Length: 252
Length: 252
DNA sequence: CGTATAGTTGATTAGTATCAACGCTAGTGG
DNA sequence: CCACTAGCGTTGATACTAATCAACTATACG
Image (tube, rainbow over the protein chains, first blue to last red):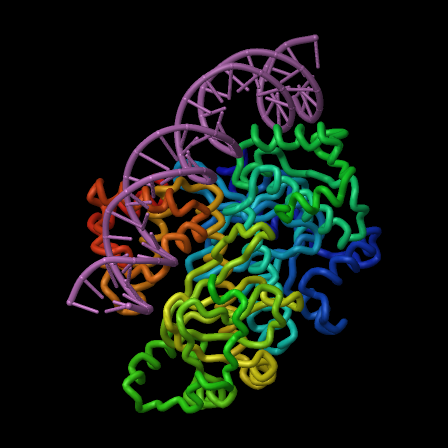
């Protein structure tokens, strides 16, 4: 929020890592990313060619990557860190469209510009690909296009589930769904089910679930009192009763 | 609702129009569809090849085309009529994901099956394409893949706007947005801005906007009392004050 | 150590849901 | 042709969930 009027750091500026050192300690992480991000399913050769059009950057927390309405010029892939995407109403009401983590990509859009603002939550390491270059690469690499398409479909499926949550679930069900999804996402990344890391603020969670900070806080406290979760700190959540949480998320 | 346990009509069964007569009175409509649906941007030759894998059907109102979880085997394009897509919670709470009209396509999904149920609202004429055949066509026709991709992106953008509506807008704003969007959609199809046709029931509108029937009804009545809209019948809505409606939709 | 920010908790309000009744419309069958 | 019925839409009374307003506590930061 505080960075809303800060101009975006240039990827070619001082915060950039110009060379990806594939033998660095981050290598293992890169492999994981390759499995999940849009490099997956591509041959070694294809990945190398993708690498020629990419650019890295390490950004601080609360850094605005681009704003809703900006010209759609790049696609981003998160190597490491956490990003939130949101839309605003003129009076400041905010809806967070999604939280993204390592391996996720974002930056699709139409000729009307990006349809959301993207902002880092934690310090984040990003890969950036220019749409222009990506487009010409896609001409030669149909599998890349396939990959982009299937990712768009996945995003769409996620968006539709979130519509069900926002339109029809209670506060408890919303929070339960949020925790279950975060935990499942973590497991896919090789993390344990519990505790779940909550790098985002309560305000962010509220704006993601269509609630207020107070309601989110109260709901957490309530779930804690019922021994369904534990809150060792505001940034971590222990899932004590996975089954109950899952049922609650499904609305039963 | 009443057709929930009715087995889907087979496209190869008695309700099928096996041959598309391009010189029929529907021809003009077909042209319009070609502009909007995924045949747009394709050459005459490409459209012909698409035609070889397609299949037509005329379905009655309230007919379930496929259900959430069904194996994803076809993509559908609406020639004529109206369709709603929805998701259900185990206890029956429903969220309508979208209303679709002439020229719209639907039927994207993952290996987990379709992520929503599709049901006709009015009697509807559909085109159906098998995913399998479409996939092999896409190998040869990159533009077709492009087209599918850009349509998925458009759907995604729409889903994200709906998230903002569901999470952060008031009942009045929701209804105003709904009417504005419907009117704009109509204009794209060459219809006048007003009156807007409302082929769907109040219950459908409610489940689309995350409200109850009663709230939708009351909100319509209220807008009518304020002379912003007129309701000559429950199926039509006259937009008297476009600017106010638009502002209301944007939340100002 | 002091200040600013984030998170929690409490009291009250407001907006929408729920429950209930009634009117309208369209289709049905006598 | 018209009364009958069923479903949809509207309206009213009340309840309840979550929002708002406000105070306080915990945490992070300089």
